[in-house]
Amino acid sequence: MPYYVTTPIYYVNAEPHLGHAYTTIAADVLARHMRQRGEEVFFLTGTDEHGEPVAQAAERQGLEPRDLADKNAQRFRDLTEILNATNDFFIRTSDPEHEAEVQRVLQQVYDNGYVYEGTYEGWYCPRCADFKTDAELVDGNKCPIHLIELEREKEDNYFFKLSAFQEQLEQLYADRPDFVGPGVRYNEALSFIKGGLNDVSLTRARLRWGVTVPWDESQVFYVWFDALLNYYTALSYAREGEDLTDRFWPASVHLIGKDILKFHTVFWPAILMAAGIEVPRRVYVHGYLLMGEHKMSKSLGNVIDPFRIIELYGVDALRYYLLREVGFGQDGSVSPEGFETRYDTELANEYGNLVSRTANMIGRYCGGVVPEADTSSPLAADFDSARERLCAQIDAVELSAALDTIWQLVRRLNQYLQDEQPWKLVKDEAQAGRVPAILYAVAEGLRVVSLLLHPFMPDKTATVLAALGQDSFGLDAARFGAVGGGAEVGEIAPLFPRIESPTPA
Image 1 (cartoon, rainbow, N blue to C red):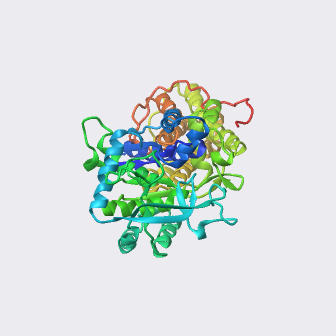
Image 2 (tube, one colour):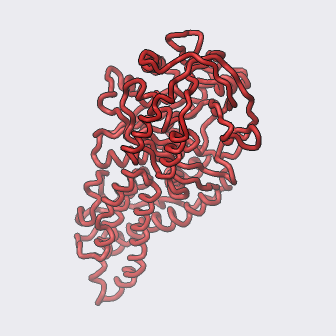
Image 3 (cartoon, rainbow, N blue to C red):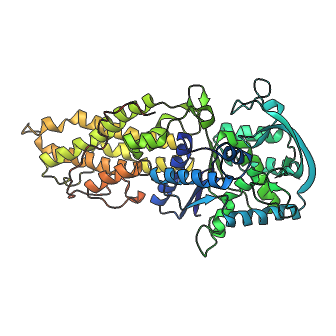
């Protein structure tokens, strides 16, 4: 089956921060890896532009909502490009093609009898664009995410019969225990469903910045239903003159943060069922990047600027750090200090130094040419089935575990060099003959490691592979001994040079 991966679409009421970069990088790793396996891939990201938070943010800045959306959508595009993300399309929910498809799908939900008129009253968070239950509130009547006091709001609008899908959703979860990952998020979503589903507001009466309801033009759709449909609508117009829906739907993996779990694991499959559309194969939920005790958030002012880190250290270092520092699927703390430690100890000293030592020794002891193949090396056992283990971890969206699998090989190569010490053997007439086999094994291990690592750090690994005379990135070749000797090894500048700069803000 073709592979379709999405990020959540990012809200344009503020500029991007490291949390947005995190999800985009993760999706790009999945997309790049699957392309290495020869799969047909479609990778979608973009921006969520309607709703009250955008209208309010625009008003505070003296702008029209459209102008704010244009400005911040460009910043998210810029971030996508600087992260070296290989997305196939960047959707904006203000695209007229998206709006028309939202109206078509939700009109079908209406025609199928899952919409009715009613009055909603509840605690509303304008920054979440979501009503909160009493059980979700903290410290009295505060939003658990943004920690702002909420007011009760009341409005006449249209409702979606979410409660009608109670049994179907429970059956979905029973039939597909991998529908939501990791397991703790599956349990959380199922618990929410089994707690009893209430119908939810589908439209807004007093807001104009949104997609107009086709059966009642005095209202617009609640921003979440507009936004959730982007994963489906994008396929209908992402490629000019071609509808990709039949080829790529249902999506293989939706990557989301845990703060939007209920929308993607409960509302989203229900609205698709109501429209007669197949539900996605999997929703994978990652945790929060924490600064101190709180989720990184512009509204809380506790963010790290990804543009600044990339300017100082390069994009590959950021891509590596985010998926290495925090176990994907869990909450975890990030900090400038933690970044610098990973950069110095693992990127510079372990991988970067391995590359430099290998290239230098082949240049000095082997005339700059990788020695002839000798697959009897003890390293062969360490690489046995490494590719298969990595593929299984990527299929399970265990990105940090996959990166650890690779890094154990990096460390094994360093340990092998330290144990064998070819720089000493070459001076011993009785042992010098072993040096070519040792350096072939290290160069071959480095080639395989760099192929496996390529989706995580595409620029640096491409440099290494080119220096080793390799110009293909396919995973079929990620087997120890698959490539013989004879390649000329080019000079390689330090991959991760020491940075004499102040700690990034």
